[in-house]
Length: 346
Image 1 (tube, one colour):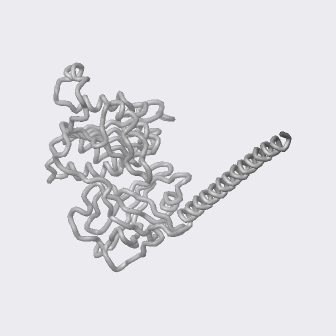
Image 2 (image 1 turned 60 degrees about the horizontal axis):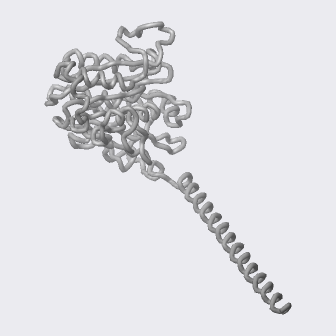
Image 3 (image 1 turned 180 degrees about the horizontal axis):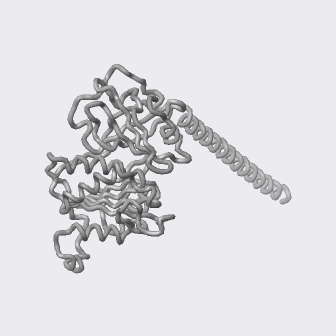
């Protein structure tokens, strides 16, 4: 009997020992797996940060036309301070290096500009089409933590700036939309200025309506006259097709209206201002909208283009997706019932 009890105890002890061994083995495997995963993740991060990206790998060519596949040297021919931290820059590419093709510079297009000190590139949208002399004009802002923006802001007339492009940001099509609402903040107005210059050119067949809602922090940070005056002329000459409205977070030292003799509203662009823009562009009597709130806005030919600081874009249209893909519609526009095919984040 005693022997049997010892045998049972020994059996249990063996099972426990084997169980402990299995647990310890499992834990060791888990630690090893975790170590491998962390090591792999670290290696991936290191590769992402240290290995060459496209801007480092793209060559510089000064004897073949401008292209997205390589950088082309250009000269800074003009630099004008427009406010604290912003400038209008004019960059000239040799005319013989301009690519052929009428649709290459159709709106909305951009280029990459490379900081050749640290070999990093960032996208910038020219204000206008390239002229016959190869000039591109940019409105740029210097950001405290923006390496390329600080480098570009510091450039002097005569300096060389390397450009890669053009690249299509969004393709304009006449007749695709009945109403277009452009919402911008800061220098995010540049792609819309480029677009409007084409839409309201003499050969445009556009028959819809466009409203521009633009926001800046203070009146002094509103777009310069080089940008404002043409926009105001578009609105004056096309009152049935184009309206614009400006907003500021605060009037600052002006204590009231902008010193630019421009009607400016205090407050951020939100649901009320967007709904007001939609109602103002409707040909139907205003009171009819009171009885059509239940209609499905996703069926209407309305397009929202949004460009500006990420916080503003997120509040209006939802955050960008991974690697600055469009991501789902969110923010104010989602609450109003608009779908992804009606919203584009620049």
